[in-house]
Length: 202
Image 1 (cartoon, one colour):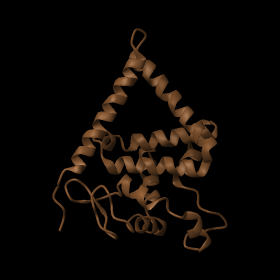
Image 2 (cartoon, rainbow, N blue to C red; image 1 turned 180 degrees about the vertical axis):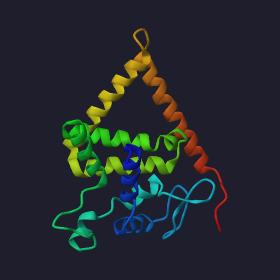
Image 3 (cartoon, one colour; image 1 turned 90 degrees about the horizontal axis):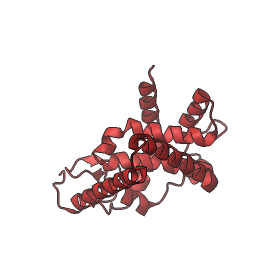
Image 4 (cartoon, rainbow, N blue to C red; image 1 turned 120 degrees about the vertical axis):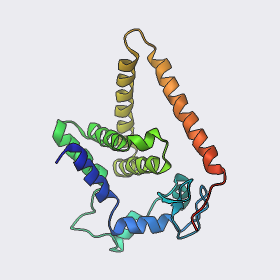
């Protein structure tokens, strides 16, 4: 099985099963501030099709009570709480490359970004939400100190790549600033699009 197929399999496992059904119901218990989908209904894309939960709806609902569900026996256990799939991906990376935990976490996040790079290039909100899910899982699992380690590693990787792209006579800080400015402009255009009227599925 190729690396790409393995990563696709990881994503399918991450988004299937009874736990995911419970998470969806948790987010849908509030109206979506972005697309105005009512309680119990899926979020809608600008074209009116069902899509992933928008970030604003997730924030309004708050994080799912995984610990409470586990205590109530709603999440199946085999002597332990199942680790989030991103932690499994981090463990795989650590074994594959012989690296420490923070580097393994960073590899897991980067691989997730690469798997969804088309959606990110298009500014797809569902893709950004999936990335948020992965990072949130790491933050909850590692705690503030571990999360800081991941950010440090990712920032180091971005700096290294920026220096390489800029070249020996280039301006890495200018290149990085232009990239951030482009991402911000894209996000603002998307927000303006989401605020404009669009057809809804009946």
